[in-house]
Image (cartoon, rainbow, N blue to C red; front, top):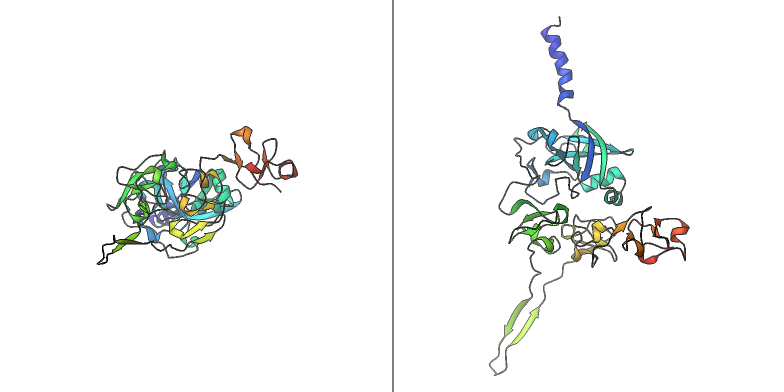
Length: 342
């Protein structure tokens, strides 16, 4: 019969493995309906980690494994298609099943190969397991685990009158905010500048701040002439012009170059997730006048296919297929209105 000392030694080796977390399942990026969202709140999500302490590689953990916040602040490495990336758990995904993660778009793009791949795939299955947070590349910069993390059932912040736990926008069933509240580009209702400022606000789903009104001064003279009015326009802020896949919007003081759309999550591109009404920030790039269907290589395009366009850089053949061969892109074979042509 083993001694107490040997039993404790065995327990010491087994316990860390029991407490470690791992899984396999559905992985989405914030904004595709996973249940979390990158919201500009003072306390970030259900884990209650302050926004300035959250790394850019973050994740919301499924409700089945959340365990009352026991795993908040832990880091996991997830793998897909020969690629892997490390994320830190900072939030709860209430609607996610066991093994599922809802991760930052940049992390999703990293593990799928590109932002374009992320938009095209939307949902993948990954294997993941707990690792040291030093693998984030910033050892010690983030808390290993917050003290008494608050919980909520909406995946959003619970603090402050300036914000709200209500979701809104095209990624949340086209829900609209209550009267007087603005819908931020990240799909949260509130009344801060992050929610209401022009360029940060989705006007179709709530109130938005008006553009600054011109200042007006009146000069009067002692003559019988009517007073004259002088109008001074407010200074125009300088915006950096950036290309496809780069960050855009109010938070980045950048607009997309000609022909590119700025998505609600702040990326330049030309897919339906960038350009369609409700997904697009019109102040920071081009937007579709009507919702356009974008498709990828191997899918149907053209006038006979609901006017769908090839949105991944491929060409639309005269037979209505997206592809990259001469039969798709060559002169006489290509429909220039629905994709690229050589």
